Length: 400
Image (tube, rainbow, N blue to C red; front, side, top):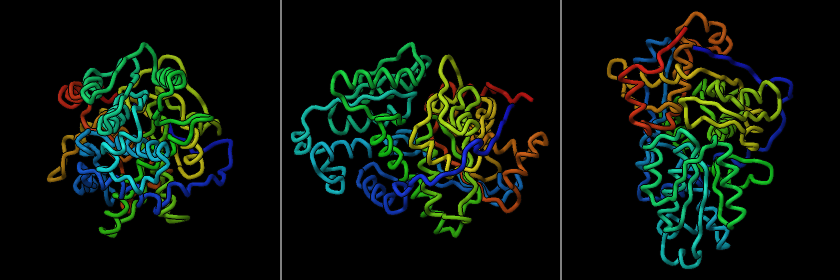
């Protein structure tokens, strides 16, 4: 059980423009996603009994395991980015392309045959494949070594051509990009690098539907988070949430925002230590497959450098602990089925709140009986076999 935490080092916070993640933009994207027949609000779960046990005021978890029947949030980014690609290719505004028109024969005839390609550890690729399937277009998905067979099959069942490569995630991204450049395909990737930032920016914006739902619901409840904990791989989701909440809660109203990563491949944590973008290559493994990424999103990193407060790297056993606690609720609290990546921040924070060895981190974060904690369960049991091994059989137990 290892937790390391830092604030941004060796760099002053700048003035990176986060207006593309503001409330007005979020409302437009929310309206786009609401046009999908499959759209439903995902629940914001209040764990009152657990909050009392952990001695904080409130614990809220946005449960994205219900999103579009795909068991994860990623479809929000992929579907919005693909909609933007189609709109730009046709010289149209996405406002004129609600879902039913977007997937119509009229638009398909205008668009012609298009191939979308992406690399994924699972959830992002499934979202892109779903969107391409709705458009009746082609989709190619590259996956890294060790990809769970269930995740491979879920993507393949949506009509995508799936290939598992003997490579890590970041290498798969480069391979997909090379093929896209060679064949004229559209790469829809949830990370950014120099020269490739428009589509990743759209993907980040797509995730704001989730943030906007949270914001609306908490306003109705007359609640405001004091602390937001966000898991990160390349940092697209975490930076989108960071930018949105920094916009809607400006200045001193902004909650304390903490980014959480697996210590096996904590590229954003290492970047925060260095004060510049750090790439992690080579062999690495974490059970948090959705966070197994070694190269930060260039756009997202700037957002987090300016507006996130702390960066944490944590061991796999803490993610497994989070899965078990959320899956075994206290009293009449609602059960949350959370996968390895979805449960990571919660597992970390629950131990910070209860273990004396982390008392200094608890004090630094200013966690107390007045704290209102917000988490996002980004995925459910997308690898059911491993979920049961963790929750039923106790795989990856906590080690001191």
